[in-house]
Length: 265
Image (cartoon, rainbow, N blue to C red):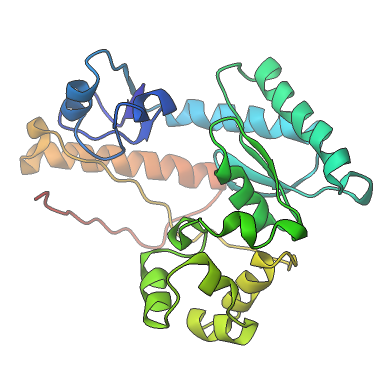
């Protein structure tokens, strides 16, 4: 299965199931390329309102067993364990109960990857180690050994720009990243966020500052039928309506509106 923003052979997939990935299908290339790789592929239109509904069901199911510490996105959240749950022996049954609850009360086709670790960053990395249905524990004794093969670009907070900056400083792999000192990380990130990152990576949780939503954006790859200015205007208006709907959901007003167009190769 792939999800596309609209019914067109020229638009690109915005989500790809694990089964489709086995055929070499990735996000971005046109739907027709996905059909060539897997003739029986199912293409479903995006339903953002439905995703928000399922998101709320997921959070409610998780909160039946654990308090949510932070919601990162529509399909990712962190929970803080209390002292009696903070050992692997005590935490694993809770994690399994969360996963079972999702399957029984939200949907059996929703698979949850869960990471248990001393910090939210390490728990995220643990969850990424085994997908789509993993349950991975990282303890202080596992560091850094179990993460040495992890590309640093797979770590949250290390995007392309940060990766290039690290490379210029001689940091090309996880071990060299691990060996940095807190003040070096602060200098490389050019902010205190680098030091927070260092402590989280080494198993010491620090409080994350509250983030304030400052931008809502939507984009779409225009189909061949919508590449004229008149048709593109219709798509732009549809994207604006979606953004306005999200603004209302958050109880916010817009102060600036910007639109950009990027030509395909």
